[in-house]
Amino acid sequence: MRELVVLGTASQAPTRTRNHNGYLLRWDGEGILFDPGEGTQRQMLHAGVAAHDLTRICVTHFHGDHCLGLAGVVQRLNLDRVPHPVTAHYPGSGQHFFDRLRYASSYYESVELRERPVVEDGVLEVSAAFTLEARRLSHPVESFGYRVTEPDGRRMLPDRLAALGVAGPAVGVLQREGSVLAPDGTTVRIDQVSEPRPGQSFAFVMDTRMCAGVHALAQGVDMLVIESTFLEADAQLADEVGHLTAGQAGRAAAEAGVRHLVLTHFSQRYPDPGAFLAEAGARFDGEITVADDLIRVPVPKRRQARAR
Image (tube, rainbow, N blue to C red):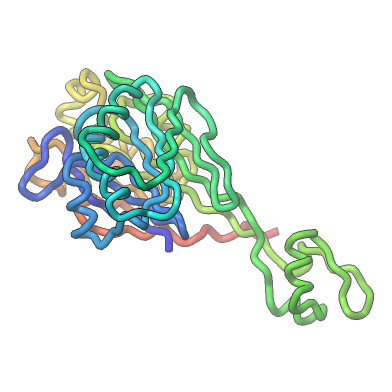
């Protein structure tokens, strides 16, 4: 399962219908929680997200609407005695904030919480499932966006395998080593019985002006979750306080070749969410979701491999 679970969508102050920020990316066996704002623990209950689902926490920056829920989430991990380690990424310059939130009150620590502060652009972790990287954004406090990229692979073609007599354990050998001997003694190469399988990708961009980091994170991703705090009428204010407009988010998605654009982090000054859709849609003709609390958005299906 690969999907985005939206826990909260408000900027700065929650409203009657929008909680502070919170976003869970389900990626196969991983659960990456981005920017747990105040109330995230309760929103997880409403969304059917358990503490055991979390394997990683990524904080973009230490403004309250993006991190005040961290204390409750950390304590819930320990209360529920989550059996696996949980890794936390956050701007290294905010280590003192992370420490205060992690130990905001007394509790019994039962979970291994691995602190991995981000100090510069680059790769944070590489696994068989994906590469996680961070890019610096432009905001009044140090802020980083995150990108998840699955490596390209190959899709095995059962009809070609059968035609060449490759079956059972031989298929695994072929996948691991790139070739295998068929029953008739001929060598079967993996490119004879498979086709390229493009990897999927996801980017998370919160509070920022337009900058190089936005473009680097968004480039070619299947899903871009991006703040669109303001509308174009307030573009000057957006730049002054380090935020994006819906129009800028749409233009960035179009220039980067994004497939599915998810807008979020809305200022309470705008009563009509449709205005964000209209402004972004004027610049981006792909799929757009104007996020609401507690919705689930599937990561788009894999791109088709290019014909050889």
